[in-house]
Length: 501
Image (tube, rainbow, N blue to C red; front, side):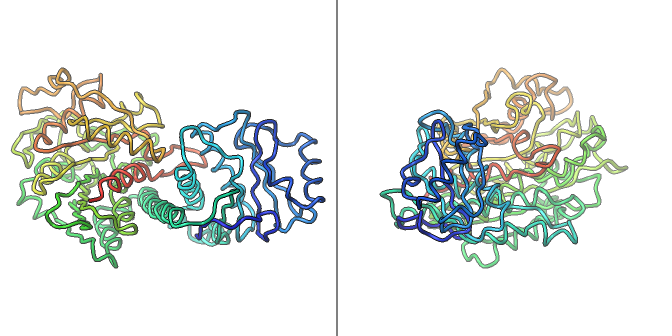
């Protein structure tokens, strides 16, 4: 979709919908006084009727306002405070996007007069508007059959969003911010689509094919896929133990984006790609097991971020590693009590086959050493314990380097895709002691997100590393909103953009 700043004169422009923001007590900005007299009188009359609440995000759509050039007028309340909190602003933008996309409008003119977000500048506001509009436009339809056309009807009609703000004109900075937001939004959409696909479609082999599709047409992005024979040659016994019970073959997907000189060490992203997780022999309860197709959302976020890089082409080197496997019970599946040998040479006692994500990740993290990376970030729907600790708003953030942790936390704050630092203290490590191997794959009932991160830390001592536990943020459970969120593509992309050479 096309986004840009329009010149002044919103009140006289033709559009499918004009968006007007209303402040405290539903007072209107200067734009209202510029509307034709009949239009102004009509709006004032509607507001006096009391049908519009002043709570942030409440809105009222008025069709065919007298003498108004726009076909529709959308009145949107900003709340009772002089400035919006960032989360309230996002609620407002989401409300506007849903309302506009619910009409037949082909273009939107949005007056940003009166909009002030606490602690945020124009750049942040503009980028978040584009990101939220693009998120609202996304509709899953891949397996919907005859519903595909109707599913995307209104979203497809909307082609232009024009912004207007008194004293501000279109410039190169605005264009750059919009382009950046659209690149991130494309990555988010890719991650959401991959996450939403059913596991009988989105297999490890399918993820590999999608990686190749993303790289097609981008000379800076290359893809290599390691198959089971090659994984055995690399002695990735932990990774292979997860796939042992499935007929779906595992894949290690390697995506290399080269935007800087070869001499510049890359940043590495490692994604957990369990395309379906039954729990293996330690099988999960049947309730909500369908949502275990989302257990590859870490992998999806890596592919989505690489897609964003292909669109934006920043001057940075990045490697994306996706450890893709299916965790199933069968006669060949790994059993509780089995001991496997990781690529690092460390042996692992598998006490719970449902703690499989860390087994595929540990070998991929060892593989990452060969790149002599500046940083490594793994992304995984790793533990239910992280959901208990942080709910569905923040990713759990663990790191062995304070500077990397701070950079990721700041990147998440910038794009409102936030992560919260968690402890990685040595006192937690003894929970992983095993009588029969170098390390156990689970550490008991308490502090499960932390002991999972402690497990991964055993394989990351050669570089600066961070772990994002996205079990509470990667998808929404149940109801009409059920589906993948595409997080943390915004955080990861922002972090990498900040690393430009």
